[in-house]
Length: 98
Image (cartoon, rainbow, N blue to C red; front, side, top):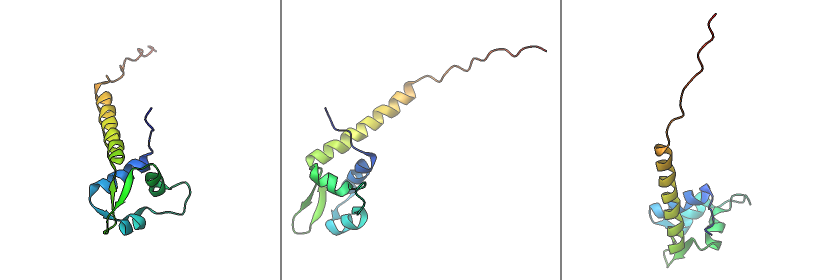
C-alpha cells in the first residue's frame, strides 16, 4: 500500500522539481532544528531526493517524481469529484401562517 506523504513533503518535492537547486539553497530554505519539521531529512531517508555531482545539485529521484505525480493526480481526482457532486437540495419547509 502506498505511503501517504504530508503536505509539507509534497511542497518540498514540488520546490525541488521546480528548477535546479543547489545543496546550499536547499539547506538555507528547508533545514530546521525542529524535530517535527524534518522534511529534508525525511526526503533523503525515504530516497525521494539525491545530491548530484560536483555542483551538488539537489534533484528528485524516480521515487520522488512518482510521489509528486501521484499527489498531483490525487488532487486532480479530488477536484473532479467535487465538481461532479450535486449541490444539496435547498428545499425548505413552508413558514407557518400567523
